[in-house]
Amino acid sequence: MTREQFSELVQEAIERIPRRFAREIHNLAIVIEDEPSDELLDEMDVEDDGTLLGLYQGTPLNQRGFGYGNQLPDRITLFQGPIEEECADDEDEIFVAIGETLIHELGHYFGMEEHEIAPHEERWLLGEDDPEDVAAADDGDDEKQEPKA
Image 1 (cartoon, rainbow, N blue to C red):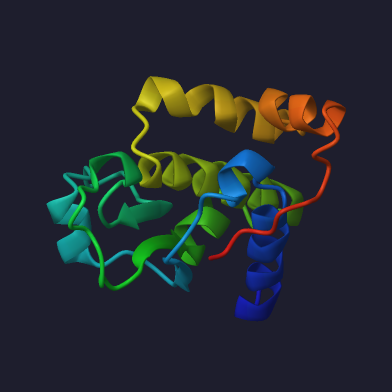
Image 2: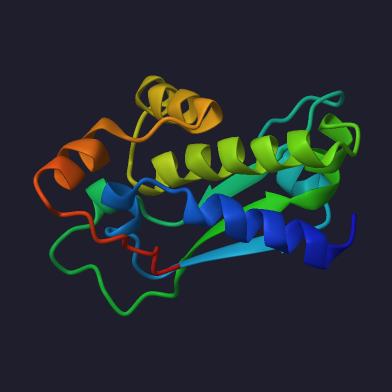
């Protein structure tokens, strides 16, 4: 898959981020790299037979104090090679893996623990709307908010 095709799938996944989260994304770069470096895999304690599909780097929103500001953007990196390899180059599976990885790393951006992220990943995988987005739509707040990434 070309980088352009992969990027289009990433953009499609970004568009499916629940609105209540998309509204709160500020100063965040979402980038694509081919592979994680050996140094990064070592730093993240990834075993020899393991890999890394994505990575959040920055200060989670819930850990930012009053003086936080004038910072470079936080960063979510999606690793194209490992995602494609895990999905045996199946485009539908690649899209799902991109979305799941993106939601997972966004959970870290928001300062969520693994157990808090899992339900959001599950809803994304099932194509279900976020319950708070549904409630907001029912209250008339149906304007779609694009992420500010």
